[in-house]
Image (cartoon, rainbow, N blue to C red; front, side, top):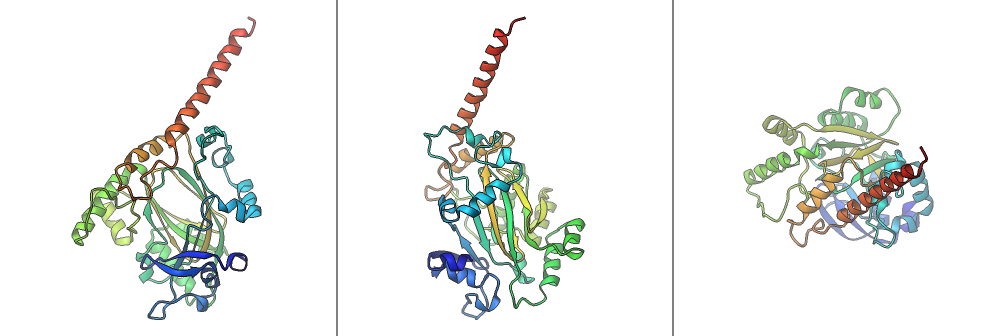
Length: 331
């Protein structure tokens, strides 16, 4: 449907294996191969590319381009007190109307699967962290035609990715469709992960400029070898989550995470600012200031100081109003 509706729009396509951008591509080039291996763009070696569609639709265009889909998503998000734009526990809802609203989504993440044993060292989305919390919904999983031995490879990828037994049973003992393998780490372990990645970069004779960051630059995917080193050398172990069709994955602000698509997936994410993790939001905005001026995360796009100020202002106002009502109540 997307190929028919929006096929002639320009697209930024990225090959997940090489992280290179495909020049001059159209939206149709991506969707034609979404569920058909024979219609995919190919490399110079005539191998089908593992593509992702970057930043589409852009920004606020999701609502304008896909109104019915937007309404359907927003009406069905779990924990609406947090995830809806006007949720009582979503601190971003406390910003007054005259402020420029931060772009909290929803955002679509569309990408092919990475299926082979060689593909297990690549990520659909490399390790990174976000300044706000997010709810990521798996809305569609497509199994491309012409895909050989896919169930066997999916099982091996789950096992290689440290998925637990119950998660694997959802695949082997039911008809559920797995879409993506996630690895999520605690926010408190981010510095240890950085230290490992800088160490590995030095071992590989890579540069480590002071105004760049191995997590914020999204230049690493922690494969089984790196995850093993992270545990052995730093005692850090994350959570391996297989996201099936219809599952929602919640990612806390500041938590390093990465994604490896198993099949072709459409995921939609809505960001929010929770009271539980707002301290991470504030810390990250200070951290981002030390990145290079050309880095996409250099600016405080979330306006976290304004959000905190108006959330506290609302809370104090409510307490004072309640206090006044108590004083007026006759004994």
